[in-house]
Length: 99
Image (tube, rainbow, N blue to C red; front, side):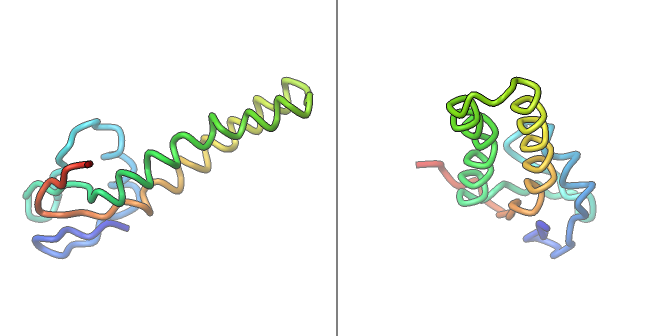
């Protein structure tokens, strides 16, 4: 779980999960009200994890599985990725460039 780099408060899974859907570059700590930024490594890991459900459909389609099985496996993969994403969040006080 992410920890604020200013006040060292550990964020809960639920708090982190809710902040995942803000689509903002900076996240506000609920304890000290300072802005925190995702680390470069976290952004890379989260972007790779978000691509996994799409990439998992390629082998499923090549094996000619029924569409109901493919859709249910895709749904399961998306749910597991969403559950796992808050654990990949690491915070910084400064915004790091991606490149």
